[in-house]
Length: 218
Image (cartoon, rainbow, N blue to C red; front, side, top):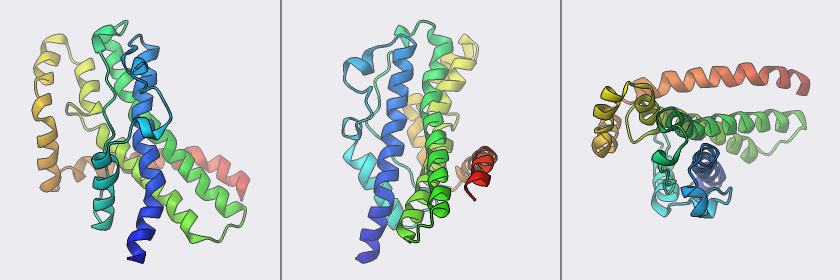
């Protein structure tokens, strides 16, 4: 029981912030490019309560953590985006989609930074280091997972935006089946062939970015 409570305590904040800020980033980007749908519904907010889905934000990540899953992911209530209201829908769809994964990459950087700050000020409490490590891990997972090039994931939206209209229309028709395809790939352990390289490259980028700051902290 103590291990379960400790796992919940370590992962709670990183999971909630990773998922909800991901969605908030979509809302901010959509408003910036002309769609006020999410803004009008109060979803352009950093308040996690506005984005939390009890199952996707809490139960699924917690269950995966308790089962020692190699990948922990979840989802929030999807931010409503009317791409037709964007000033340049075909082009700006990609930027709205990319905003979420980029938010996760930034958060991974901040959790990594926190880890080294804790080291530099002599904090000895293991709990905080484990939370920082969980924050990095979860955000890298969400970054890679959401960039998988299949709709309705963000990567699928980006591909749809890049493809010529003729092919983009055909590709977008996969969306109703995309989630089931992703689940199938996960069950067959095939999704890891995407996740691991993308996470590794993202982690390498973060290490390069944080290296100068780390040198100042040591």
